Length: 367
Figure 1 (tube, rainbow, N blue to C red):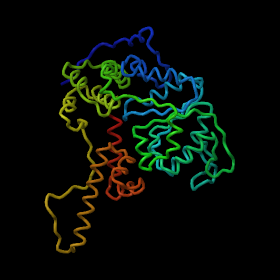
Figure 2: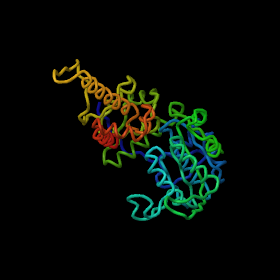
Figure 3: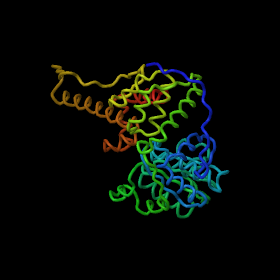
Figure 4: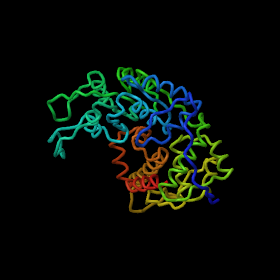
């Protein structure tokens, strides 16, 4: 069905007197919605009490629930609000790059280091550093992070000088760090250092009272951003939105609404309830290894070569299936496949999955 249009709506009224009023700042868009949610009230109560201090905070919750919004609120309601807020996604970079990103480096520290570069810790001096997905840090970097937390001091790569920093540390994870500690995948001393104060952000399925205001907010935002008329959703779409479990939480809802604005259609929404995979109307499919419908035998090939080729095809299919399941999150794919991040990248290259990654990323950015 084609989404109907409605005139522009005015901005929502501020929270009622007595409700917490979150801090605002650049890039802050949905804080006022959270302040109205009953399930988020304990979160905001904790933010109000912890923000004025320099206590380290660990924010937990599923992916896409708004952990970064909570982190930014802690910063904007703190005495450090006018100083830098530096975000580091610990899962976005390989371990060998993440260390130089955090600590910085001097000229000549490694091949390609033509000039010195300050690290994220140094850039956050006087302000707040936000370590997102901190559970993905490799063990050797966990030790260096622990040193920074204890001493507020570190040495950039290739340097003999020590850098002292005045920073507040906020970390976030969608993993159970206590369980990872039990399995020896996360240092217990680092866990206790990070978990001085803990804030749990509940999933969107437990905060359905926020959905109407989130929908209104994102429709207004993307209609203005893309120069499209603001849609008026049908009753059926509203029913789906209120009943769907939203495993991807607010991020999934936002992408769904962005697609409605771009396509000016709600036809794909029914697939949410049916569990069908959500695909763009026009899909670009790169060349990928495809399993033959029956074994292909070549008289010139020996049995070992036939087995090798079959194993290669099966490996390619398994790679693609896991990457699709984790939405091309390569760190998570490597974990599920029980290989190193470097090995995963090599396997992707061998099976021509680099193009698939680029296409998937482009489609994700569009929808």
